[in-house]
Length: 449
View (tube, rainbow, N blue to C red):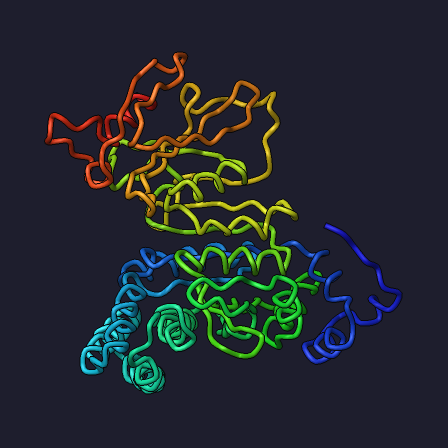
């Protein structure tokens, strides 16, 4: 954190929206303003946290509680399973099956509308229903136009038109979410993430331009108003919550882009870096980061803390925890990332932060910290397990073993000699064929008894 004290800064207090916005437009001092007031938190809610009206109520409850204690910027993914359905629509469009595209879109819109109406009182349905219908009709027309452009496209998912369709989930969810959030009593404002998240044109997995993102945030009127309100000492009004959709962005020439799998996590950390947030909290449907995938291994154990390097190693090693690039934006400013469970708000979750002091290091379980999910090596179709190993000095080392080899593990651990099973056996956690080696469940239990 750094401070740049300007001679005329006092003269501008108390700020109002017009004066601060004018000030921000003609001065680089916004960098100082943002970096001097690290009082807000970036909060991201994933698709599993938004999959039903009941889930939305959990999210609203959290925002209500947190909003009174600390200003928030909220990033939301698309309603659960929406992006997967949109991928199907993109493929149908490339094959000319527009009827199936329309059917898929209508199912998506119906889910969004039902969730929105279930979140409010019946007497308020008419006004909200009209607003939602207008929004979804507009998005539907846009989607069908993009679908026609995809006919016979060789790589429809990795194209500007494909990204335009894939981003519709976040566009719909974020706008409806903000409208309902306002309806349930939390002042908020929708911010189009495509006006802020600047990227290259690597469609399907676009690379963010972090410098341009910072510039875009300082120039966005709603966000400038947010910074202005943060300046008030003491605050004179409740600060509206900016709500943005994750996953999506825009190239400098203006094409729609997406950030790839779990891209909403990356959206949150990019915004945290650009605004110098105090922390990022990522809400999901598990209790933070676990020693392996709890959907495969029910007795997977909770990991309370990880360093940036450890979490990045697990992501790159195949653990579907975070987007592999999620932590890159926050490392330089040492902004912690807290992974929590939307549905168990009292659980401590996992805090990811700078390197721990080795003198204070306590191994989680013996020397082994985590066993990542198996991933497939596309070249030879083999499975790989990733192990995160804690060294005696408190650092961590990533180790990977392929099923193609007999594996001699460290004698200090147990001296087990393992062959890794095929990917399907690992993912199912089953080992019905006696000729197969140990399942992921069994391997996990060796290290985390």
